[in-house]
Image (cartoon, rainbow, N blue to C red; front, side, top):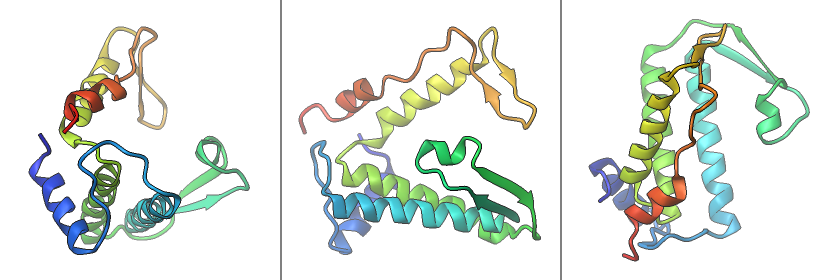
Length: 153
């Protein structure tokens, strides 16, 4: 069953004339590009509000993050902007699940449990503060969670 947050976002998207399928689907390229733009726009606005300057190299995709971005403390943080940005990120990412017809609750539960498993033996904190998973960590079963949440609605 979708969370109340998910249901409110689906209602917004319906009022905005966006597709809100009830079954799992892969949206068309136009919808996927829109979702990517919205996610990146909100993420960058939040990073700006955090007071962090990010510069990018010439890579793309996950490689952009791994070694091609530089971060610096460059401006005063904006509390209101950070909180608004976090909420907006939640809205656009949840809207992406809506656009794909994927129920949020089982997926969030699966990912939360996988994240908690990172605190098993061998888990450790990286120098920058990120917690790293232990060697025997198991990834979340995303497709299983999707199936549990969307049993052929």
